[in-house]
Amino acid sequence: MNQILKLLRLKNYDTIIAAIAGYIIVYVFTLHSGIGVSPDSVVYLSTARNIHAHGLFNDFANKPMVIFPLLYPIFLSITMFMTNHDPMVFAPILNPFLFAIAIYISGRMMERFVNHSRWYQQIALFSLTLSPCLLEIYSMLWSETIFVILLLLFMIFLSKYLKSPSIKNLIVISIITGLACVTRYAGITLIATGGLMLILSYNLTNRNKIIHGFIFTIISSSLLIANLMHNHAHSPTLTGDREKSVTSVFNNIYYFGYVLCDWLPLPENSYFIAFVVSASLIILFSIVFFRRFIGRIHFESYENISTAFFAIYGLFMILSATFSRYELFSSRLVSPAFIPMVWGGSSMIMLYRDSVSHKSRIWVTVIILFIFGCFQINQLKDDFENYDGVKDAGIPGYTEDPWNKDSEIVNFLRRNYKSFQPGYSLYSNSDEAIYFFTGIPCSMLPHKLSQQEKKDFYSTEKCYLIWFDDTSNTELLSMEEALRHKNMAILYQFSNGAIYITKEQSGGQ
Image 1 (cartoon, rainbow, N blue to C red):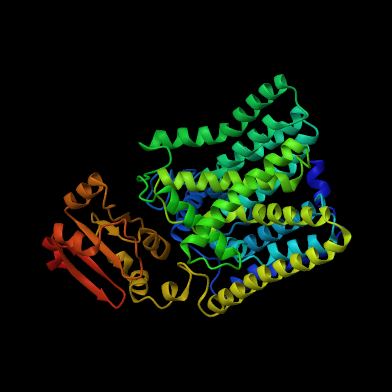
Image 2 (image 1 turned 90 degrees about the horizontal axis):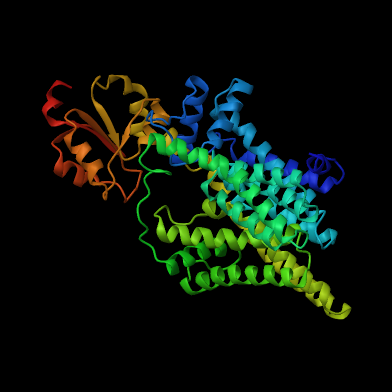
C-alpha cells in the first residue's frame, strides 16, 4: 500500500501532464460515436449487464461466459452499481481515466529506473502516451484496459519483493497476479515471470525459494482455478471451444513480428524482416535477462522485469497460437508486451551508452535520439491516420457509423426486431451484432469444423437466418453452404445483408 501511495504523490509535472494528455487523447478519439465495441466487447458488456441485473455470469445468448475470464465483466458490473450507468454510457469517461492511470504509474516507475537521465525518461513517457497500440485498446471496451494496469502493479511489487522478500510482499504480488489471470488467460505469463525471478532471486535461501514458490503458485493460480472450475461446471471445456491451430510455429513467429514491425519504423510486410525481428528480440531479451542474472546487474529493476516479461509473453503467445487456433496476432493481442518492449529495449541502449567513453557517448546519444525520433514519427503518423478515420466515422466496430448509422439491415432490425415470431430460433454470422443493436439473444452460425453445431442447426425446424455482408468470419458456415443444406427462403433483402426464414413457414410472413 505504501508503494502505491508513493506513486500517487504529485511531484513531477511532466508525468501529470502526460497522464492528462493521455486522458484527453482517448476522450477525443471517442467523441464521435462513443467507446469502440468489437464482438468480444459485446460478450463482456452483456455479461456485465447480467451480473448487475441477475447475478449470473451469462453472456448475450444467456449462456455462461467461458471463453474469457470473469474479472473484466465483474469490473464493468461494479461500475454500473457505483455510477448507475450502463458501461456504454460511462466507458467514454472510464477508459480515458484508466489510460491516465496507466500513464501516470508508468511515469512514476520510470523515475526509479537505473538510468536517471531526465531526457530519456521524458522521451520514453512521451512514447507511451502517444502509442497507437495503447490508444487503440483504451478506445475500446476491452479487458486489456485493466490488464495493463495490473501488469504495471505486478512489476512494482515484484521489484519490491525481490529487494525485500517478505511474506507480506509475496502475498501482494500473488494477489495481483491472480487478478491478472482472471482478466486475461494470458495472465499466466505473470505467474511464469514471477516464478522465474523468485527462483533466481539472490536474496532467498533454497529452502525459502521452495516455500515462497509454493505460496506464490497457490495464491496466484487460485482465482484462475476457480474460474476454470466454474467454466467446467457449465461447459464441456475449460476455456470455451478452441479449435486446433492451423498455423506453424514459424508462421506464428512471423505474425508476432508483423505486429512488432508495425510498432517500430520497419516494413512489416516482409516475411524475412518480421521473422528476424520477432525471433531476434525474444532471443536478445532472454540473453540480456540471464546476463544480468549471472552478473548480478540490476536484477530487481523494473527494466529487467520488463525484459523477462517480454521474452516470456512472446514465447507464450507464439507457442499457444501453434497449438490452439485463434485470430491472427493483432496489436491488441500483443499489447501487454508494448511497455515492456519499450522499457527493456531502451534500457539496453542506455546501458550501452553509459558504458562507452565520454567522447563516444555524444555520438551514441545522437544515434539514440535519431532512433527515438524515427520511432515517434512512426507513432505520430499512425495516430494522425487513426484520428482522421475516427473523427468522422467513430472507433472501428459496432459503434462506427457504417454499422451504427448507415447500415440498412441494422436500421431495419432496430425498428422491427419485435416482429420475429415466438418459437423461432435466430441464427446469424454476427450474433453479437444482433444483441448489441436489438438486445435480443441470437445463436451463431455453426463453425465449419463442428459437426455437432451443424447438426443442431440443420435439425432446427423453425428459425431465421440473419446474414451480414459486412462480417467476414471464414471459420463459420458460408451463406451458400448454410442454404444448400437447409430449406430456407429469403424474407428481406438489403444492400448489405439479408434475412431468411425456414421455407415451410415463409408464406405466412
